[in-house]
Image 1 (tube, rainbow, N blue to C red):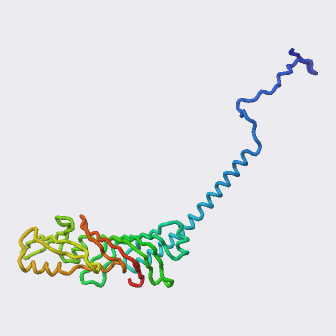
Image 2: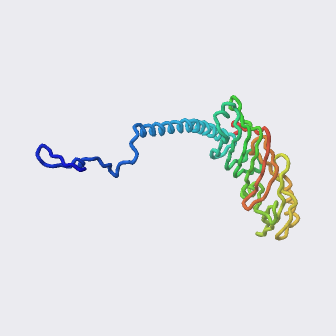
Length: 267
């Protein structure tokens, strides 16, 4: 039964007027003391673990960058390139590789390697090296790779300079075209086969006339030019030329080798 009570001032008031009704904005479940602080602690712990994981990676990257920089400097000094090559030490962690004294895999890409000490110098436009098992001497006098693969690009303008003839891609794979200037502004076009021979040399053989008429004197001159293969003198010691292929812009030369040596003092 509903009762009306009277206060001291004589006015009536409803005994249920101040009954508590939960607000719609309040959660249905009661607030659990310590819930938010626990979540905060978990977040901090996760952040700490993440830092512990990332720290070795950052340290390893610093060590790798230092080795790459020193390797690039040594290669530039040894090969006489105008700019330092691109060097990448592959595999993780690099720190343990450095501590052991052997880097498992190192990639080097160098540009514009000059050819010194040759009567017919043929520069290397680009040399890409993949070295396995790279170690260095205690006195930094040399670095040696257990095995290596390399590819070199030789541009037609550089090949032309070495031969003294205007060289371009031939009419068939494995052949190049040469333009021979004759008296009275006449030109003769010949093609010749390109191949790899021993001693890291590129041979030009079996030339044939494909345009114009070549006199006997001109044929004798070409015999002398093509008779001597061009030796690549700017390749690290231990690499052996395996093949040469023709492209639209130049020659691609492939090398393999064991105990490949780099000496900075050879600059």
